[in-house]
Each structure stands twice: as C-alpha cells, then as structure tokens.
Amino acid sequence: MPFVKIDLFEGRSNEQKAQLAREVTEVVSRVTEAPKEAIHVFINDMPEGTYFPHGEIKKKN
Image (cartoon, rainbow, N blue to C red):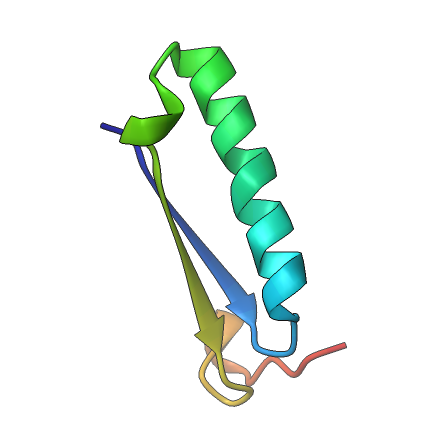
C-alpha cells in the first residue's frame, strides 16, 4: 500500500491538488504495479514562514 506525501506552499486550488493527486496515483500505480485503490496521496499545505532551508526562511515565489 503506497503512501505518497507531498509538501507544497499553500495557494494551490483544490482542482490543482486533485489533478496532482490523480497524476501521482497514475505514475505510482504504473511503476509499482499497485492498484490505484491502494495508493494514498497526502498533500500538506505549508503556510509561508514554516520552511527554513539552511536556517533561512523560504518565502513563496
């Protein structure tokens, strides 16, 4: 049962996230030969100010 976690800065529409989840599911199913029903995609909307690569705040582009 594949689990896929995707962290994105918030701001994508529900339609964009749904499309991303569908396409990721397709790829994971094809590569792993797992049935689509067994694939779980989690999309985490990260608010700006919660990501600090190299100790520096990262802002949305």
